[in-house]
Image (tube, rainbow, N blue to C red; front, side, top):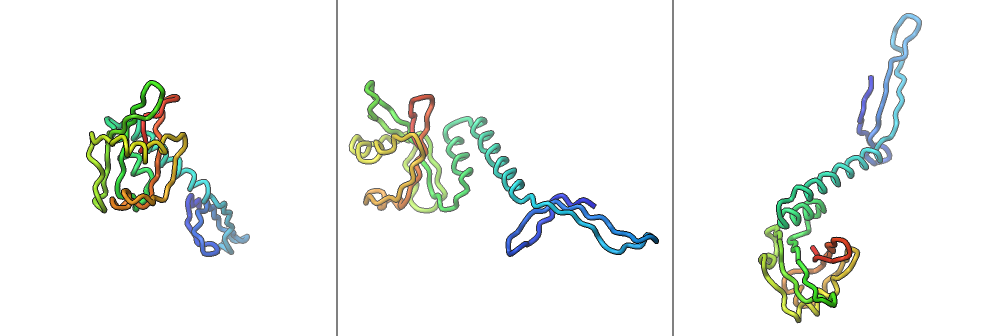
Length: 173
């Protein structure tokens, strides 16, 4: 008998095994025992699950009809229950590539905490200088938020995911 994914507890941890079991018979055909071969495939199964999750995320991004769906796909891909809101900001740069405009292009809200700014909201030059210029980055940015303005809105930490096309940053999530 082949048991493709037999989940067992080994040393207090759940492991996934591929198992083959066959009866051991004596000269009269009586079952005297069982011969079993097992291979631990836990890591392979976890990698397959991660690959499927990434595939589904990229498929949803490719099928997104608008920025709202892009943002929803991104939030759901993280699978972090503590996320209570997400905002996709579009950036505008001047001819010298200096950030001059920030506008809410999409938003998502879990219903917990304060709702995000509505789509179409533009940030003031003061807020752009104080907050958004530090978000012009190439790699994701993880921050503990200490600014009073942000904490007054219930923001205690933030993840900034830069959105790039070629060598131009279009905005952040």
